[in-house]
Image (cartoon, rainbow over all chains, first blue to last red; front, side):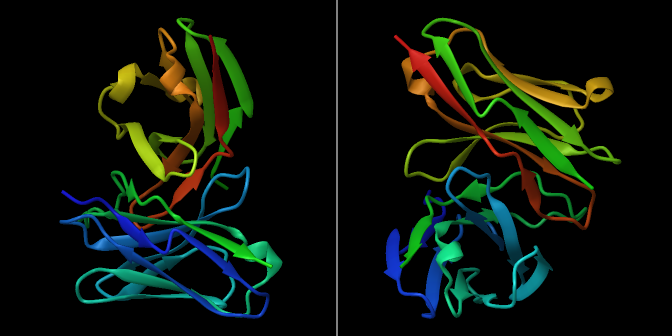
Length: 116
Length: 114
């Protein structure tokens, strides 16, 4: 049973460029969340997608956008990259829960983005 | 505001010694609480979770944690440390229905000494 798959594993971009990160959720999961983990910090919630719509968003600027496809896979797009966007970007999937609680994510191994 | 505090960014223990990693949360409502482990260059792996059932929760790799509402704590313990336990550990809280995100602590790096 494949877990959460992210690509690419590493990426180097220049300030001002745009980047797209990809995620395939664990089989049976239909909700995808994205987290940013800066060096030495805990992960910070960017947003969550369910049924191809953004369900909740954290405190990130509009330069961060996403998309979810009918097969539940997801993309994270970041425009106008800043040096401060350098981080490990984690995708996490979970099954939908009717009561709205999150009973536990499955995380991918992440994409390490370096902005120079 | 909800928050998670992990006391001690670095903890060192000898192999075979007790592991104790501390986590305190701030929440006005009953939370769900989680411990995750992160090995170098990897994502986060769920160790255990508290979802309002038994207050003493057993997880993988011999870890356990106890939810203490009066102390707003969810400390992680393991009776005997193994070299393979060296990693970074994150405590996280998930709140009421309708708020799907986790709030993570800043992490505790565990070093196991031979």
